[in-house]
Image (tube, rainbow, N blue to C red; front, side, top):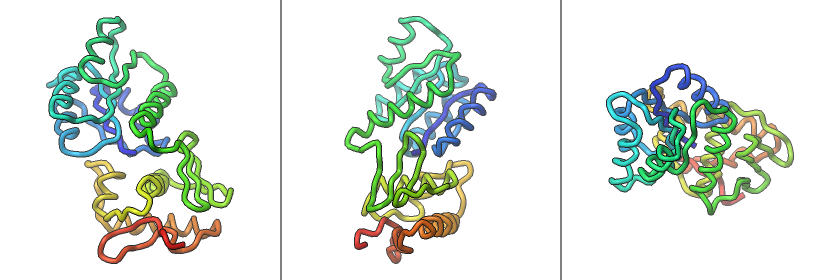
Length: 225
C-alpha cells in the first residue's frame, strides 16, 4: 500500500513516516499543500494523510480540489482544531475521516487500516494464494503455516502480487506502487528484491516459480502450479 503524508511539522512527519513504514506502507512526504496537490494529481496512492494547516495551500482547499477533479483517493484529515464545525467543514470538503491533534499513533494506524478496508470492500482482510497467507492487520506472512520474516519492501512486493493475483506487473508498475518518488531506484532493484523474496519463500517449501517472470512483460503469481 502506498500512502501520501502531507504535513509541515517535521517532528510529526518523522514520527508518522516511521510508524507507517514499520507497518510496511510505502510513504511519500509533502511538506506544503501545493506539493501535496501536485503529487496527488500525478501519482496513485491508496490513502492520503492530510494536515489542515499547511503552507502555500491549506488542507481543506487541497481536498476540495482533488474531489472537484474526480480524485477519489481516501483522505484522512489531521487538525489541531477540536470543534464540531471544523469536523463538518473537513468532511464536507471530501475527507473520509478526521483525527484531532494530539492523537495516539496506534489510533491513526488503526484508522488507516479501517479506511483501506472500506476502500477495498471486495478484498478479504486475509490475502491467500495456494499455501501462502498474508494478514495485513498483523503484518504477518506464512507459507504452509511457517512464518516468514520479510523486510518492508519484500512484504510490500508480496502484498502487491497477492492483491493482483494473475495480473502481470511490469517492473515500472512495481516501482510506482512500492517506492516513493524521491527514492525511486533503478528497475534492477525490483529484480534484486524479488530474488531475496523468492529465496525466503523457497526456504519454507514454496516452488521456485511461485512468483514467475513473464518474459518481456513483468511478474505475477504463477497460476499454473
